[in-house]
Image (cartoon, rainbow, N blue to C red; front, side, top):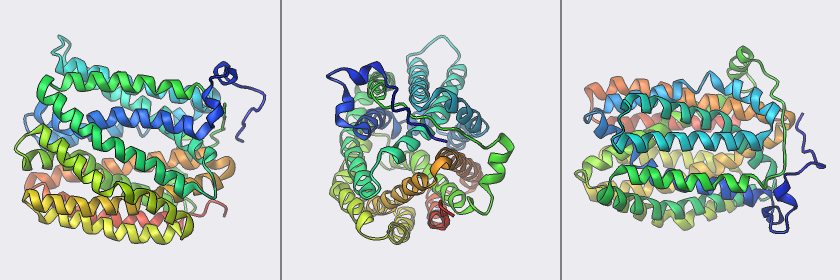
Length: 405
């Protein structure tokens, strides 16, 4: 059973300058936005870094990501058992330390450390496992708890609109830094920024949950009739999402002939065009059915992938990316609004729902990555976008999950 422990508080919460005066959700959002800023500085260029490191082998890049997600899956349940004892805030702080470890390892790789780069990569993957297992489930549990039931869509929309604003600046800054100083400064900057994200977590109210499923039981529940809709949807989302995360940046890198600054500028311009659309979709998710908007957004989003797979020129890529980005907003805002509603409605199963969601995402990503390793051996990168379009239609299955049943 979740416990809010009203009589307990962190010492920072009683200080007159405490962030608790502005509420739990703003503090949680501040933490995530700082983390998002750090990941935005590196995210678009990490696949390109790996692509160059592995001698322009897309298969090795996909293998690296597959290993990264495979190692996370068995530890999700163990992590849930641990944060059931420690509480969500200490778990999230430990998760942030994991991503800091990752940035530090990749800084050392590009800085020419005498330590074997594959050893550093292995430690970096361990750091990503820590953040995946100990940060993301507690974050989503807290967001479901702290967000408003009646205005959740608007809050999600505003939250993502701020993220997209950050996405305008970060790729430009990152592209310029890499051009001038190399990747190592990029990783160092991300390390500094993400370290500051710990501070807002110190002002969150204590909140504890009890994860009730065992290890094998968790995987049985994952494919049970009750959770099947959520599992199918999140596996589909994870599968298509990894194409945009790992393959699309490399495709852009090829289109722009290896110009980092142009890749960053292109990404920024696309985000600017769709920025205002985010809040509108968030409000519409509150006013209209999130399920209906999800189905509409999924169709537009899938068409965006198809269009991306058909273009080869910079102008064509620009038009397709703009359309696809709008589709992404139409998909993700109602999808996450619905996901947080389902998590909140799950009552004392909020942590089970959230942990199973994270496992499903990783399983979808691993399945897609292994499949793409085979496909890209015989076909160009463009074919991956058609596959992503087909898989993304499965996201609609999220509407089949009914938390209160």
